[in-house]
Amino acid sequence: MSSAFQLQGVTCKFGDLVAVDEVSLSIDKGERVAFIGPSGSGKTTLIRLLNTMLVPNEGKLTALGEPVASLGVKSLRQLRSRIATMPQHLGLVDNLTSIQNIVLGRGGSRNTLRSVRDLLLPSDRDAAEIHALLDRVGIEDKLYHTVSRLSGGQKQRVAIARALFQNPEALLADEPVSAVDPARARDTVKLLTELSDELGFTLCVSLHHLELAREFFPRLVGLRAGKVVFDGAPESLTETELEALYELSAEEMMTDA
Image 1 (spheres, rainbow, N blue to C red):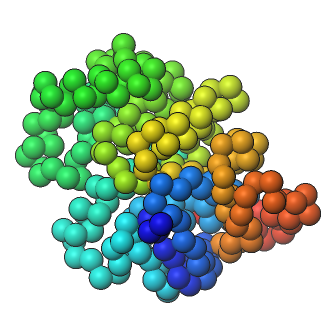
Image 2 (image 1 turned 90 degrees about the vertical axis):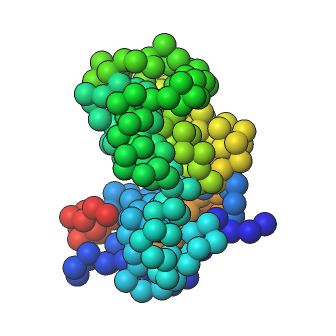
Image 3 (image 1 turned 60 degrees about the vertical axis):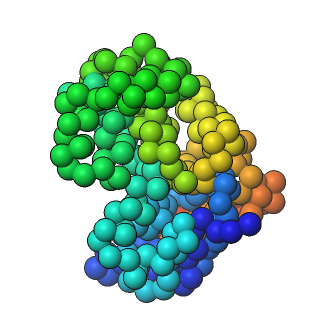
């Protein structure tokens, strides 16, 4: 099976802070992977490297078969349009409707004039497709609701529909369930994994909820201080490894990456 993402000795720094430290990792197309580890371990930075919003200071990154460092602006934009991202705070515009937020999902593959036109007046074709996506995620009646009127769980579903509207080859989600209760968190993670199986896209999710990572993901990648300290099946993660993964030094408690 070919790789969706390959990192070879990748390091990413912010000043003196090494957020990702010589990470080598390969993620197959269609694979489901959960990134686990304490706050400040590098999970968010790793997500931003995979979606090409960050460039490594050292090492080589290949995304969807493309060597990221050698891409020009146009090619990089085209690559990003093939990778959907759900940021930690979802990135929705509260004063826009669900359909307007979702139509922005294809902004990266459309020119500026087309994007503005679609935002102001989505085509009948886009509206029908978006309605079907909202139906798939269980909130088809929220098509024209302003996002500020939606619950936290409904906003998550809009963000998922926006990601799906990209027709992505890979979906990256950074702590997508940090702001909802445990029952809704489980429903959201279950939905994401079902959609990944159904549509065949690669799914990488960073999670603080270890129990959800173990339940829904066949592969866990554990990060600590920017390094991969575990990579394997959930059942192979021992209690000793788990304690070592989450036991932080005083210095690590002061960082967040």
